[in-house]
Length: 177
Image 1: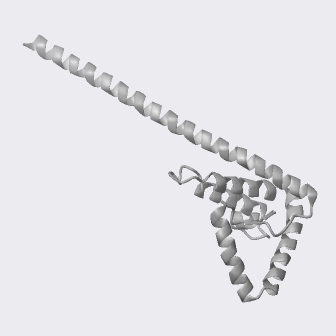
Image 2: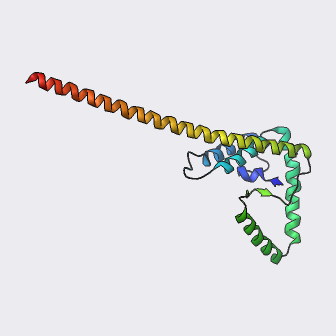
């Protein structure tokens, strides 16, 4: 199975290291749980992290680019070889399959990576990205919980101060009479 990391980060294959880093940040911000409350962004964050882990590493990117070029040639051959009718039928089947399984729109099961080392690195990047996404969610939940506790403590302190001030005012009035 092959993943189009350039498509995930929305960059071209000839992107510089700085452009890759910038695209990663933009995608991470765009799909961060803070910005998408009520939406499960875990899978998308995993893909973004996975793509970045491979593309930021010089050797991994060189190996990935070799496979990426093969993948692009494979797609072009498939496109030329299919008739419009076959293509429409396949797209219909693909849509049905995608509805049945929550599959990434950037994964291509019809293309296998030839480079065994790159395949291991990609699998490792996937594992790391899953852990990074889980950690992000844990951090988000922790920050939310801490903020809620802080608000609660602030409200309790405010109530105590209001009661104390009212008692002082009441004592002052009682002493004045």
